[in-house]
Amino acid sequence: MVETILVTGAGGYIGSNAAEYFVKKGYRVAGTVHRHVAERFAKLGARTIRADLTEAQSIPLLFRERIDYVVHIAARASDVGRDEWFREANYESVKRFASAAMEHGVKRFVYLSTSDVYGLHDFHGEGEDDLRFDETASNPYPKYKILSEKWLAENLPPERFSCVRPCVVYGRGDTSITPRTIAYLKNAPVVFHFGKWSGRNRWPLAHVENVCRVLHAAMLVPEAGGKGVTVLDSKRTTLGEYYREIADEFLGGKRLREATIPMWTIRPVAWLSSFLSRNRDHPLFDPTLYALDTVAHNLDFSNRRMLSWLAAAGLEEYVRGEG
Image (cartoon, rainbow, N blue to C red; front, side, top):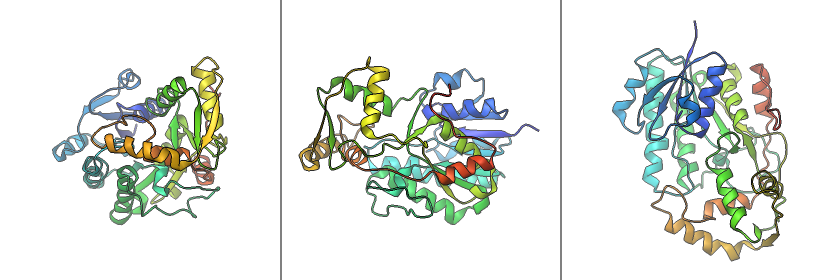
């Protein structure tokens, strides 16, 4: 019997890639969409469910047909916005949805979290066994991802859930990081790095194909039950290298002039951006305080657990340039 996967947020960037991936793997896919539907998902012919997961009455409708696995990707993803927006979309709705999935016999609930649950400071190759949640997180995005992961661990049988924590996701159809970087590089006469790393800090890239493969592994392998995994490409890319790669690919090989300035010189600007963007879905201008801390630190994690789960599922890491 062909198994059915419900992918939430299938109209978005990661969700549409995941839906396409699972269709190609031979699963029957149903996908929830809210406002927008990515062209990739629209072309799949998968069952489309219009739903707002923040509305409790929408959730029972998702289980009118048998669902074997849930891959929960839908979320509010931004470095700005009101706390209550994130609480409802990234925490309260997760609790309702995961509870309904358990009641309807879903084999495993795979939750897309973020590596930001570890915090934004310098890392030097730590793996999941070494890492702890950043309990001081004040930005609502990681704050409610942490609370959701804790709730799942406290309320679901460990064999029936898993958490996938991607780093900076990029690749086919990226509507977030890549366009934001292109706009910055296109308009900046000088590309600034902030703080002590001078652009030599690791920029933790996670190709969207690797995110999809790890979601698949997290869904299937026994050792993934009740645990979280960091998704990070094995190839180490510094922030400076990333900027130059983007310039080569999208800006005709534009030669970048780079400079490093102290954090204190830019933090007031970042604070202003965050303050003026507090009621917005996207930043008014870059950098926000959250974005500043992201680019100014060495986010160098281990991906040993990721590679282990992929191997257990009979999958391999996707490497840029494979096609």
